[in-house]
Figure 1 (spheres, rainbow, N blue to C red):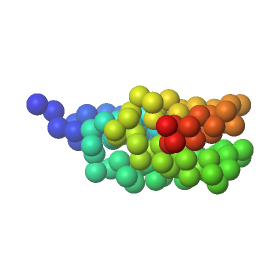
Figure 2: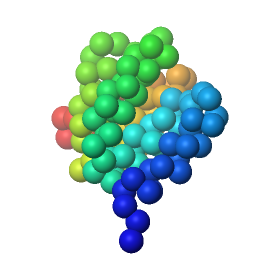
Figure 3: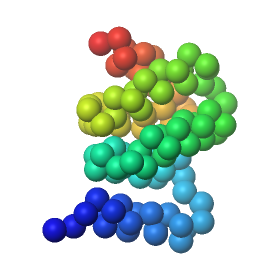
Amino acid sequence: MRSSADTSSGPEIAAKEMGYVSLRDALGLVALYAAEDSPKYGKAATRWLGRLALESDDLSLEDLQVAASVLQALPSRPDSALGVLTDLTRPSVSGAAARAARSFTHG
């Protein structure tokens, strides 16, 4: 039987070999940690949120607060949370994605 460390080590190695990991690819790794209930999840989610803030010029503080709430829901609501977070990484639709994220946390 494979341990969770075995499952996540492949993507981690690939990410290190690539040198640069896009925000969307990093989200995939965060989602993997969430699915595995990995102790790395919290730190990875925090780092991803920081990158989202730095790399997204058009997100407001409120949008980032909502993104943090959606990240907290990722382990328990992976499909819907991952969809919202993925949308937040698309610069051309971030306003609409932010609205969707707010409805996610209030719905």
